[in-house]
Image (cartoon, rainbow, N blue to C red):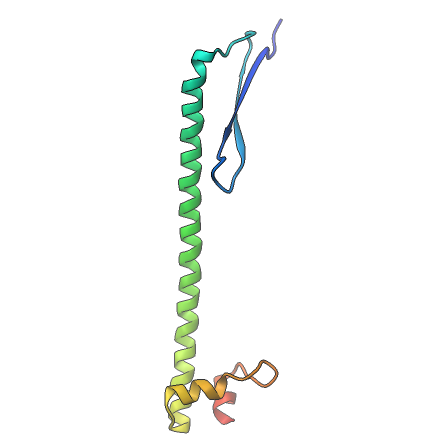
Length: 116
């Protein structure tokens, strides 16, 4: 007679963004004993730690990507402000203020903004 006669499920990743379980199966009845639980819980804890590290790495990479995008946007804004200060012969603060209008009147093109 084959098949699964014992199973044991232990939670993993309970302190992370992910929920899961370490599922163990055995063909023998009553295959998992109390003496096994400490080691198996430690294994589930190690799995949880590995998942937490992987999520931190992923979160850090995402944050880095957002920072990179923000820095690239900032460089474009600085270039536009430089163009405007040269055209209008004004300070960077004055150029920034002149282009910081409500969305209904703001323009996205630095040349159009400089012409205003």
